[in-house]
Image (cartoon, rainbow, N blue to C red):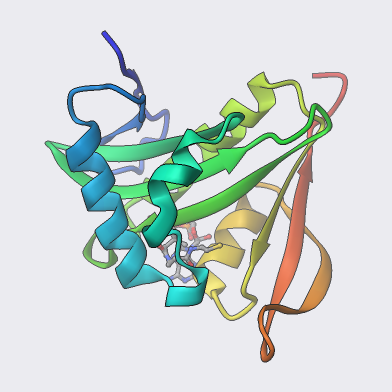
Length: 170
Ligand SMILES: CC(C)(COP(=O)(O)OP(=O)(O)OC[C@H]1O[C@@H](n2cnc3c(N)ncnc32)[C@H](O)[C@@H]1OP(=O)(O)O)[C@@H](O)C(=O)NCCC(=O)NCCS
């Protein structure tokens, strides 16, 4: 077995399981194709990883989780832990016709768990403040706004930097 899957603990999530994408798994090509399509539809070109997805996935200290619903890839998230101090959520997207079914929350929870297992103290991310659904989701799972980073995405597009600190005592 060269892929791991985690049943979501969310009762509100419609059918689907969160799966970790493992290089060399039999479904690698199909899942990466699905994700590149979704990436292109969801994010503007300059923000999209679609052109160099493979290189991103080859990076050490990075991972990708996706939701498999009966063979359909309905969403994905990427995360990385460049140092032992902090980790980042670098991508999160769910297919438009599959939103509001709990998949985004299940993916984010699973990515946070992966970061927690790396023993980092903080998880950070950047998000366009106009992406209300995403900002709400991050706040729902405990992320706080650190600051507004002017011109983060482009000259006229800013980002919130958000963070979640793990409680040392847990
Ligand atoms: C953000 C995104 C991943 C959420 O995925 P989703 O599967 O629809 O989210 P869920 O159904 O799990 O919703 C979880 C929470 O997110 C928030 N949320 C999701 N959709 C929302 C909406 N349309 N309006 C307001 N809040 C919303 C809510 O807090 C919701 O919790 P609730 O159901 O208790 O209200 C999805 O909207 C998406 O792909 N957006 C485009 C890409 C994007 O913005 N990515 C983030 C880039 S950093």
